[in-house]
Image: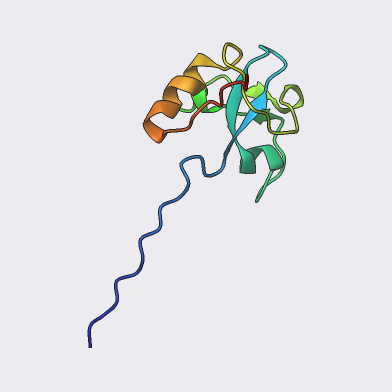
Length: 98
């Protein structure tokens, strides 16, 4: 009898990360959806955008300044740090329809 190999599943490239607008700078940032919703813990007043996750002294955003709803980021209104960190994960910033 031959043992079956489990089918290898790959997570979607953006699993858990969502685009939301930050009122402080007006840019779209990537935020961990679970952190925004407060899943598994209390809702902390500060949330960390993806562009700050690798910083030695990260600057978190006040939850109250982050939009509740996911958005489609607009070119020119997207955080350069979040956009550049997306490249290795292949998260595409949607282009405006013409």
